[in-house]
Image (cartoon, rainbow, N blue to C red; front, side):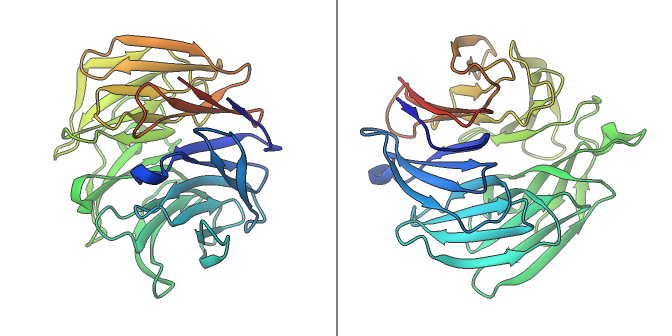
Length: 305
């Protein structure tokens, strides 16, 4: 299926994680809207949400499937009711929001990062900022909570001479202390991070045109023997994502292909010429086997089997 309707690049597509609602597909676009589609049968756009006045850079479902968390270039993060389209909360961050993630064990709390040297933690019940994480950087590209939500990793866009030391930073969520900034030593920024659903590891998409795998336990060492290569990133915010069982690692590419890798041996299983424009995100369906959604720089979304 091809789902058309966005007037600008689609940054992200995400299937609803709740099994009986898993036909719902969320998309976030630079055209200032985010949408929910019937991605399994009709391909119809079910609802358009227009609560942001800037590009919507990130979006995700809450675990219950009833609400959506979005981050926008209008300097706000919002939580919206899926059915009614009503905003439950909208919080100003004083910076363009590039990434917004929910705390894994307390979904009332979420983190925002973007064009700023800080990451902010908000409690959506009180609309109050609960923590601030300060780093000497220019912007945060992605945020990833590790298992249990005790620690999280930020990916930064560092351009100083010793930037390789601060590309990935591990933080203690409660104390706001830096746990480590000596995780990744190569001089590439990492536009996207993904946690393995079962094993103690995470991957980082790099602008070196490969994905690197790291231990998700201290000291967060990189596995130098395993790299996922064969796709191009070339400065686009190309996302990576695991299948629900953790066996397949998917990535978009700046050449329009969707790539699927065997997680355990880093072999490319399949590559799909999905789009003529850069493919920014590949989302594998949580229930239907071998089903995935892709989106591109031209605003098109496709569902594949």
